[in-house]
Length: 353
Image 1 (cartoon, helix red, strand yellow):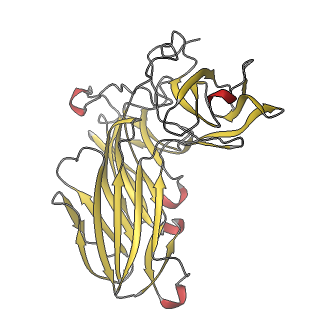
Image 2 (cartoon, rainbow, N blue to C red):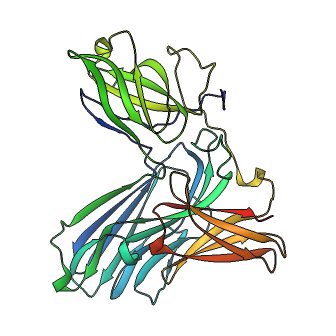
Image 3 (cartoon, rainbow, N blue to C red):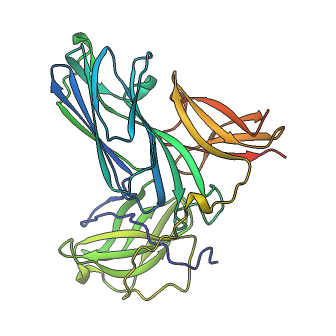
């Protein structure tokens, strides 16, 4: 039954206090947009060390920004991209910093009113990324996604607007981006106030560890759980109340793993490093993507004359759109309408036999 025997602990965590909750995926990125006055907007991007990815490169950051008259910000390796399509954009040009890191961008509009851009119709912010997956990332055991993958995500943020379009939003807005789905914890299983288990939702067969605490600082590993999609109800003969009133689950392995270490051991992350230079040159594969005129342009490395299908997947690894192209050289491009894609979206290329 085991798909992966190696321990792969992610930080899919949730707090339950005698009720329901969500086991959150790890945070990949956080975008804070702030209106400073005088038409100036500040966008602060924090990229976290999400352990699902051994490398996560932000290649471009775009904002729907009308009537721009000035700009500044970004480190020396960021370059501002001049745009005539109502967008303000920065691109990373020279290597990528170690995570976590913070970058701040500023742009000024002749409009001094603002609203919250809600990502519909290319509204809000867009981020392009290139990812290298850790081997404990969900889906890797099934071979669904490739070792390296690119994609994009749309994010709500404050943007300038005409006075009649202002929506009364506060001057500061923070959005948290998670690239992998949450495990939905539905409720604790109780009898007469005694806790005996947990009911949760997860969309694949995986191995979790249930943990409890009384102070939110010192956690005790209580039991390994196997998920059975779409919903799992796990119960235990022993009462869990002595371990505290707060509980969480953490993803240990993709698949029903066995031969796991004792619960008393330290379940520390030990991701396998996958460097770009060590990846074999195989075709076809996605090498990058760009945002242009409301389109996401996906670049593919291929062989001349090869028929390639480029798939756009959601965070549950479900293919939402696919396009086919015959490469006229060792590279090719395919364009997707950004507004019709899920957010986040991941792109991969497969050969058509």
